[in-house]
Image (cartoon, rainbow, N blue to C red):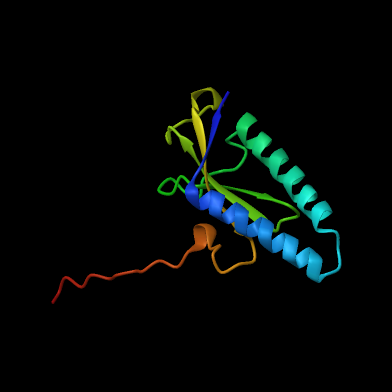
Length: 125
């Protein structure tokens, strides 16, 4: 079975998300325990899918092997990588590294569309 590795950043992100969901539910007058349970159920279902089929989601590009899984009604994104990176079949994957957990509508999530610095070389000078 494929081993799941959680990065320190992922642990931090998960704690922040759970804290935010709890405080938001209280603020909105909803049951925070019910919301947290729904989040955890969907999270565990998504993790189970990644473990059984790590190629379910494609990599950003050949230069960026990070993959992303969207869950909880499109509100959260799990960014993950496979080990070894060059794996092509599920049987070759040894680990899935959970790199980060990002709210989809946050400033932290740029995905594959991050702004890149482009430099032009003018060889005539």
